[in-house]
Amino acid sequence: MATAIRTVHAPNGPWVTENGWEYPAVIIATVGLIADVGPGPVSFDAALGSDRSGPGWAIAALAAGVGASAMMLRDWQRPVPQPES
Image (cartoon, rainbow, N blue to C red):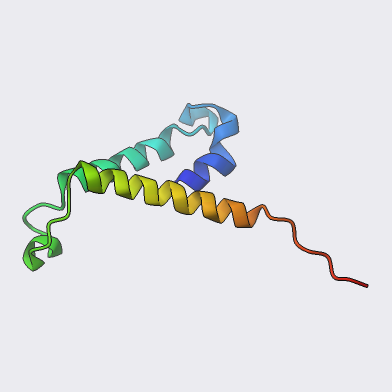
């Protein structure tokens, strides 16, 4: 969603009615909240006994998403080398 915001939605302003970045930002916030609160008692994580939740995990998930987006866009916008003649 960070890539979508940076490449498509940012120039349009914040509001979703004008194809802005409001909805992707809500999705990012929702995923961060899920990472903060945790998966709940009826989940594979609970069954396996691996509860990884809390503010640290939420910040790590956000940082991983924004960092991966930045690396992908860095390589995506790199000019293609021209073959030597």
